[in-house]
Amino acid sequence: MEPGERRDQRRRIGAGAAVVLVLAVATLTVVVGLVRTSSASTQSELPAPQVTSTTADAAAYVHVSGAVAAPGLYRLAVDARVVDAVAAAGGFTPSADRAAVNLARPISDGEQLIVPEVGAAPAPAPGTVAGGGADAVIDLNTADAALLETLPRIGPALAQRIVSWREENGRFTNVEDLLSVSGIGEKLLDGIRERVRV
Image (cartoon, rainbow, N blue to C red; front, top):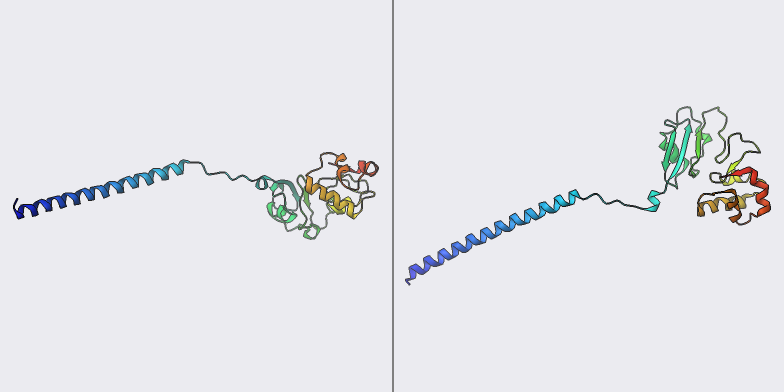
């Protein structure tokens, strides 16, 4: 074979190798593009993951009424306070007696929060049944320590133990659950049975 023919043959082989290399790169680019498109469409069809948490699911329901912009039933976090309930109800109206509401008080599941108007009779304390007075029946699940102290033979320490028991164990399911609170026996329970409810 002549030297000129060898050069031509090398050029043809080189050109053929270059064409094969270009085709291989082009094919690889198309394949990678298809794989990415397929992967993206598969991901978009999957439902979004649902995050579940017992603390996120826990809620307290509070009925907010009175001098608020949007009275109603609101679902709040279990550690919410009165300020959160008032905010959920759209805030105070211009006629609201803001000084009559303890915004820092923790709310309780199932309570009714009444925001009074200026000059109106004060709303019953949380946990009491309407009618008030010395014979008012107190709800063990919503009453604060100060209200519990109005019960016969219940002092500050025992009232706080009742509130602490409720925070640690959840709602009282019946009046007899008070026997689980340290310092409350049958005799004391009999003395307050008619003044409490759940």
